[in-house]
Image 1 (tube, helix red, strand yellow):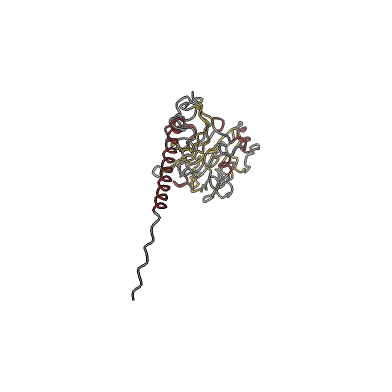
Image 2: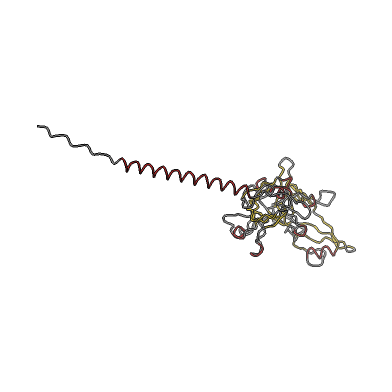
Length: 314
């Protein structure tokens, strides 16, 4: 005998309608909130005026080369952190108090201003922006020819050299004595005083074939590597009409361009800035702090990561 069917439970239609109504309200409120937020952000961006020429701009910046190395910054945290922010060859650390926001006038470049690409690069930005300004070489720091020196990879110098007695004393730190041997302060090999006549000193450079010298610095200094090895390839006292000829081989390659620094015979610092395998030459670019010239930066593309802190309209 079959059991009678169970009565069907009635749905609470009122509760269902109420739940749907609440969900619709929540969705509507969320949509309205999103529209209000979006419109407020748009209104906010429209109310911040773009930087124009003549405006005073305060910013923080990190100046980098294309390989990411930092050559300058206004931020102490960047200046002190060499692990996250590797520095350029000639980067000069400042005192902690000297790291401070940079102030400039937008559009003002040349005398009394910044480099052209940087001065024009901030125009159109807004207070609060954080962007990277790409400054091409033609709008960056110019190359000054008096600070650039080409050197033959296979360099030739005379065996005999001549100077007056005062120059000798200033160079070697003592008076010239004929027949006496001295250490060359730049090349590092022995020199012999051949003669001293009427205040004129003749010296003979006296290296040995195969000798390796380090005139531009010590590349094996782990803390501050600089320079490269120079090898004496040949030595001929009878060449060049009796003045003799020494041929040197510089241990420089394309890989050293903007990767090696050193100090020249005049005491100025430099970086290797070029290499021409066809011509058999390389180039060094010197720096002159008194003139505000940096051979590592001149003529290169630069990238400035800037954060605009404050803008004062002209």
